[in-house]
Image (cartoon, rainbow, N blue to C red; front, side, top):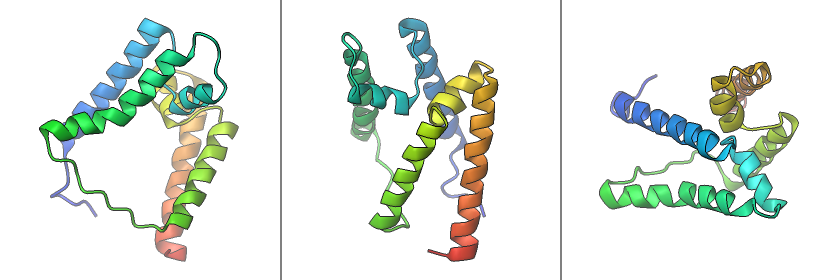
Length: 143
């Protein structure tokens, strides 16, 4: 069921365009893929001369909502899960990004735009896993 009151196609289109622009600029100006798991993972295993852009990228991710909050009202967050389920989900996502050699931003945004067959398979796999998870959680188990 679509919540027509919360349906925001223009804001969503603008956000997607900004993500695409940021990914393209990072690749063009820095020669790097905007895969969040790889960027953060590189901070955990730092290489000389490779840390500054990663820190700047992550700070931008964290500070962007605060900057947005200065000019517009931030949406109210609602999470319909307990802390245990959130921790489990986070661990499963982390394991998935290691097995898949990347995350949704690396494969779904950057890899597909570069026509990578590996990224197509990875994106189809994590989308199918997401659909299956929603089906099980909402209609089978009902957490």
